Image (cartoon, rainbow, N blue to C red; front, side, top):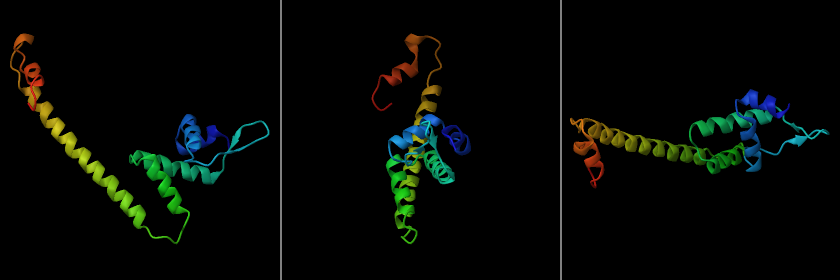
Length: 131
């Protein structure tokens, strides 16, 4: 199949597919006589796997690790488990940070009953440390 078909099958832009090949996340495609890339069903599976990992915001280097681990079908899942646990911790930390950001913005939004910029409590608060 051509890159456009792979793109459609895996729901990944062609430009991204070429990038994944450049960084060795996806094996380089074979080329037809006319120079077009040629892909197979295994490439679709791998590309969907990569896309799902990226949707989970797993970094590319860790996706490479997951792909390598898959090559040994008898190895332990401990590395996979650990990687997913670390990603879960990152997501939880991000949620905590976003919650604190939301609270700060909410306080700022509610801090100014004035209608004149010179008396704006939001602007005054933003000029202070740890407000």
